[in-house]
Length: 67
Length: 191
Image: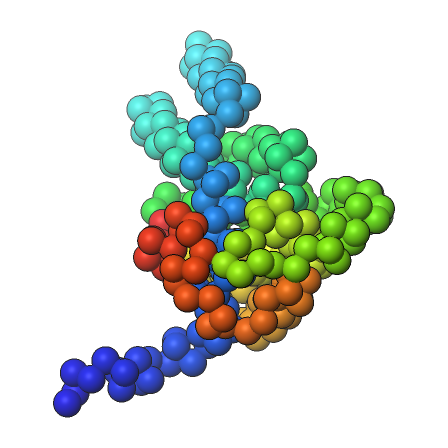
C-alpha cells in the first residue's frame, strides 16, 4: 500500500508547485524545443577563437611575468 | 609554481566550453535573436574569463555564467532605455492571426510570443522551464525571492497560453505534438 505511486506523489512537497509549469504542457514542450534546438548547435567558431586568444594572451602574460 | 594555476585555467576553460551550448540556448531564448544573443555570449565569455578566479571549481558554472550574462543584458537594456525589439506591428499582427493549431505550435510563433513578455518573466520561465533550474536556483540567479520567481513563471505561462491560443494543461496529450522533446524525460539536469 505504501507503494501506491499516486499517494507517494502527493506526499512530495515539490509536486505542490508543479501546476506552475507543467513540464508536459504545450508551452513547456515548445519552450524546451526552442532551447534544445539552440543547445544542439555546434559552438560557433568565433567563440572557440575567442577562448583560444584569451588563453594565449594569458599564457604569454605569465611567461613574461616569470622572466 | 605556475603548475597549479595553469591546470586550473585549463580546467576552467574546459568547463566554460562545455557550458557554452547551454549559455547560448539561454541567451537566444531570452533575447530572441541569434546575432544579439551571440554578442551577449561573447561579452559574457570575456567577463567570465577576466574573473575566473572568483569561480569556485565544483560549483555550477552554468548558473554562474547565466548570472554574468543577465548582468550584461540588463545593463545594456538600461543603457538603451528600453529593449530593442523587432520593430512595430509585425509581431502583434502575426500573433493575432496565429492561434495554435492542435499540437502544432510553430517555433517562430512561439519565439515571437516569448519576446512580448517582460524580460523578468522570460528569464524566469526559461530558467525553470528549459534550463532545468529549480525555483530556488532560479531565485538565486535572479537575486530575488523564490515567491517572485514562482509568480513570474506563472504569469509568463499564462500570458504565453493566451497569446498562442492554448488553454490550460492537458489539452494536448503527450503524443499530440510530434516534437523531439516529448520523447525526452523532463529535463532537470542541473549540471
